[in-house]
Image (cartoon, rainbow, N blue to C red; front, side, top):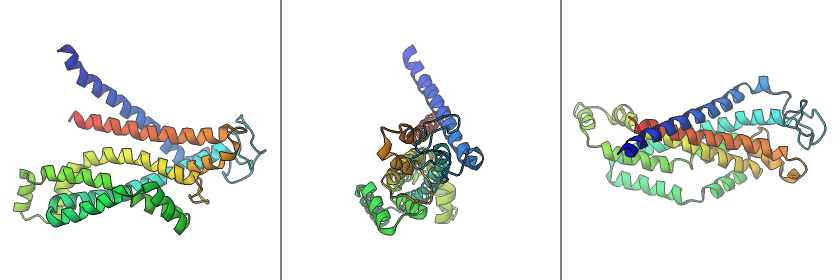
Length: 276
């Protein structure tokens, strides 16, 4: 009995610690992004030193093959990568929540149609689809955000639909209907608050996946060449893996820490919801 009683407390403590660590990592990345113009030691596109200079006091993360400061590049890459992840998260959340609530509340043929569309997007090879679209339309942050956002919502929609189905016939929903509330009001004031806790956890996990996808696109040269991202910096290091270890290390470390931060933060949110 004592061990059983300690298990939830231990799990909750672990969840809280994970959430705090995740919040610290994400806060550090966000501060770095916001203060990039102040923290950067040079223009990330300017040639300021010798080619492939190792990390030193003059060049904190070394220089690339053209003599550009990698530290400044990583800082500005933080801004672009987090901006893309945030925009994709907002777009995917809007699509997923709207479709999920509509399907779960209306039911019937509307539910069937929306779920078949959701399943179609789920079975598509996502990365290949995004890569092909960007290759056809050309590089650009708007294209990256649109393609990633419009392919990231299906799991969110299915989870929201399940939450709505579980609450569709509860008293507080039926009372709102009896009082003459419109569907828009029921969706936004009654059902949305019920699904938001699960949505926040899923979005935190989704943002980590979006970062990895965006980094993969940049690594393959499908990102916007006018805006530095971590994936683009890692891609530029392909030909210098043995000669300049710092080129792939620091962008890769930034990606790893940020994705880890999102995952740990999602764990913390999940643990907090379980304690409610």
